[in-house]
Image 1 (tube, helix red, strand yellow):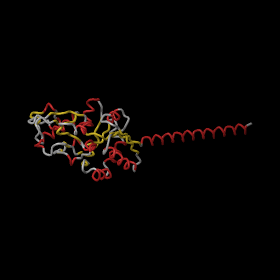
Image 2 (image 1 turned 90 degrees about the horizontal axis):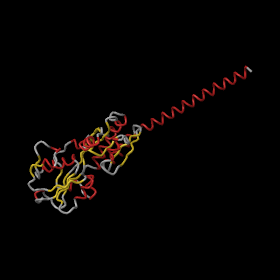
Image 3 (image 1 turned 90 degrees about the vertical axis):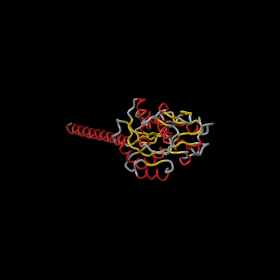
Image 4 (image 1 turned 30 degrees about the vertical axis):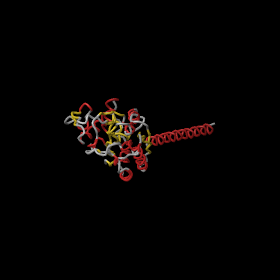
Length: 278
């Protein structure tokens, strides 16, 4: 009976060790699984070349063990909403003034992490080859969001087509126009629809980014005039949140997006539409 009891005791002890071993293994597997999940970085973006940059950066991040997932959206609202709601880790589709406007309107806490490139923005005209030929009362299509409106008006001011109040710089609005000698008529249009305004009757000038004007077969070289002075605030930037801006994910993403591979891609594939900002 003593031997039988001893055997049962040893068996119970062995089963106990086995159970502990299984639990330890399960815990390790769960930890490993969690680690793998944490190595994923979700980035929202809208269209080329921003989405292309994310994909090039993904290849660089992979070398350091990170998987960058591109979450592509169809408008200029979703990428910020996704980031604000913590459905993605970062986005790459906007400049800092646009992001700041979103923060104000939505009480968000988005943060510009790194400038990536400056787009060559300009005004396009299907009917005129010289600014001097712009007629009295001509229609001018500009963006309807505050940050891009200010940039467009600053460009018109630089060309002498209008005169803005002194000191407003890139933050001017239509109300800040002091002189409009040609009595230009301004049309406020959603940024995504500006390309279509180019072909509208009597529209003399249309402001646009290379990304959107490309939809109708145009590029910066076709512009009547481009921005004279580039304000670095308008560089298309990597954006995160206040709560994750110092995380390992964002540090890894920043490293990948400022890699030599990304810079070479921008210079070789998009030199006619943008200039790297890092």
